[in-house]
Image (cartoon, rainbow, N blue to C red):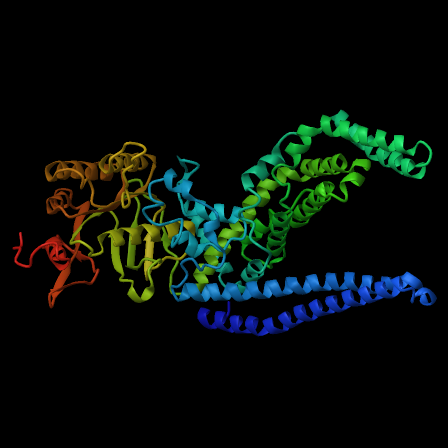
Length: 624
């Protein structure tokens, strides 16, 4: 890893990449001018030929020189354009990294993580929306550097520990998480690798869907034995008939061509369903498959020493010995040839050559040989990209430590301890940190405090850092220890007009889901302003009973409230619970918040003061 600070390293690399751009832009301009010059020369040759001035000096053969030069310039110009595009992407890559360090990353992450809609995940479990995991200005946007949809989906799963596909799933073990930490640490300083990934072509997130591609590769053969034989035979016979038809045009050649087209049409009708199914998930995905192959090749060529990374790298292979990148590139070429039949100019020729069915059969052979490995390739690639994303975050935040991971004990339950916990989505300059210590016998905090004092933000701070730690990433803290837990939260519960559900009923359903989580295993609950949609009498009785039930099931967590009567619940359930609070002070008639958590129960409220500050109450309104 480089000895320079992350900022200095990014700034040096950005300056270098920017310095290279003028030469790349000049090269692009020179090739453009050269192509124009060659095109003008070709026009001059044509004009001279029309005027009959080239008869004595080779005639129209003179046109070959500018034509060949133009083709050569097109090839070299394309390479120059690719180099320029990569140069600009490298600049954008480091600009985005510096933007993250400057807390100016929202909407400017540089890799568009909002292109993949993870909204469905927010409905699958009980904390994604509460903790701003996905969407704009989210933890996902901050972290995700993935170039493929597989990488995005893997990172999303890691940010949703214990959940997936609308159901509760096993939590990652301490051993798995320690392995991730080791791999992230090993990738922390691989700046060249991350730049190589960033400068590849346009993103493939909206292209190839991993689930469809995996299903396509695993599905049974679509070409039966008889179909394969017919395609192989006609693939030889029809081109011969077409050639004979052209050679014998003045005799009975046209009938041979008609017979060839008729046979091809009959073959297409016979194989229609097979051809549509075979190319469905990958047709018109050539560009995405090309970038997928490039991403795979980048990881295949990396020199990893960490055992876990080498094991992932080894999964990017096949029984034929061909690496995954070469296999995917071959599939892309086959699809390109298959799709060529749709070209208007080439379509008549393709009909005469049995082009489509022949390349469809070649694609089917590829699927037979390599299709079963697609799932393994996609899984390994997704993990490598997710690890690279977390490593980028680790590099850019060198002061953030990895949490110590501890298994939940049968009697003591999960552990959650942290010093100087801060919210990673808040700018460091205005992020106030606090400590937490939930370890047997203490299992929960009852958090009281005035409005806007920081109670809900503290719950989100705890939850987001737990999510980071259980993904295998560093946390925003000076130190942290935690056990694998599922998270259940009621920080952002909403009513639903369509479902006919009030806000209170929606909260009850969420609390039911949190309670069920505790039955599934170690759980962290984050309950904000619990049951505030009912009267204080019912709220106190219901909240105290729910808290006692969650603790009995082995859960740990935090519960916030404005109702000071609920503070008695912490006293009744001691030593398993403790009261903490946030408060404000009145300075020169203005409310001031320090967002520091303190032991005990808050002693005052600020609701009336806030209402007076907005002119909603007259200044003479007495305190309660």
